Length: 298
Image (cartoon, rainbow, N blue to C red; front, top):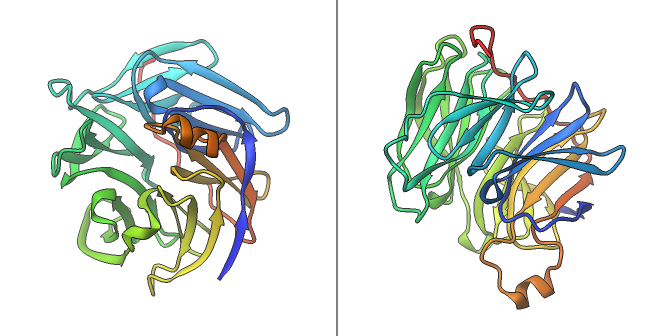
């Protein structure tokens, strides 16, 4: 199996870097620091990394079709205009549960935002994967999760992949691209715990899955038919949280990391913990879907 090593794209001590997403219109990488309340926009041409402090925990971010940023925060979603700094609150399905926060999320081909929750103390089975529509409607897609994490849809728009990190499994569902319904859950692969905790996930143009391994210091490429790991990217820090394809030809893999709960000795050993990494890979990604927002009055 081929392995390559990622290099630092932007050195920073993010507490929990997450939510990487390629902004094709601006040729930048969006990502977040969950516990530092930041949405970041990294410009690979200049090396600059603009931060927007929203004052609350931010699990992930997506782009709307009008150019707004929609983010999952502690108890629901909100909208942010980076051009003006204006914020608009969205639905808050977890408003009465301060022990819960939103984690990872992405948009499907229908333009709806899927985002999942977890307990701050990782309490088992209290998480929910929600779907947010542009009219303010909210529905539950999956319940009883522990750490709702990576999501991806295949190129045929008939398969939905999902990670509940605590299971160490990647799950696949049959997906209806018209209704958004999912059914017939099965297991793609159960990962050896020695590899690390499966965290964020993306998919490439060949429908192979790329999974960040928290505690494992790597991102692995998985064949979803066989469950085999067929390629890996090594990162010089252990806590890998998410990955996303970017660049002009979508062959740059961006990788976020965390410094959370690392002691002084570990931070000395891994000085770039929390940094943003990048590596050129011999595979091509796909562009993320955007969220419908034509019915949102901002």
